[in-house]
Length: 298
Image 1 (cartoon, rainbow, N blue to C red):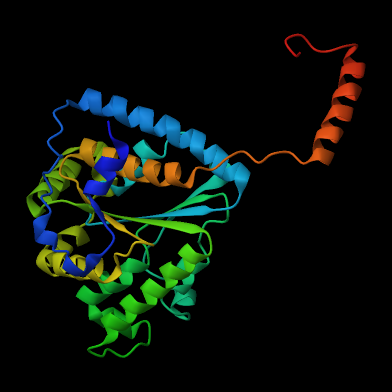
Image 2: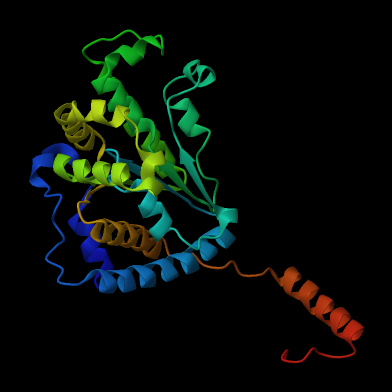
């Protein structure tokens, strides 16, 4: 499978001409494979991702920020589970952003996200993100009252500019920013919500509030369309991922992350000459304590 080609198919790095209605949530790039084959491709990608993450963590030069946005049931949580499985938890963290707390509301809308950014050598996932401020808050502008922000017609344009500047700053300072919108149809969401109702083990996932947000589906789609157009840039691209087929969305996400890490090409750092001398001395001491070289060690 051509990882770079599949990732590029869904990458938007200049949003000016983007239109969400041009993306078919059922699309799977004409890939004629069954689920089991898709799992094999995904497993191969995940194995390579683990190796690259280890090098990224050891090198500690660059960080990776992965942003996941979607309507409810689109598969953000399961994508994290399937794509990021086996990652070294020392260099990997997930932040799920719910409604802001009172303390967070006392700061600007980017503050709580800035303090959660991954450190150098780390991969961080934002499960929802600062984009909620131009999605949920845009669909429900009454939430601005909690932020003590007055509505004005240019507000969203100003927030888009703040987000672009924020992400450009991250890119210039060693953070790779990858943004994913998992795109499903309203009918597919209805089927998945029914599955949550009909499956006892999934009852905990169901919230009546999801139905209220469904009533604003078209408003949300318009908001997503606008945010991709205004914030998709080469330094912080969006991947608009057809997600009615979960096997395909997971494959695309894994390919996009893998392609970015391949381009980064992290390496284990070389030891300094003084470190090599120190290791030589340590080896001599340890071998002496063991009465010679341990079995299997040259």
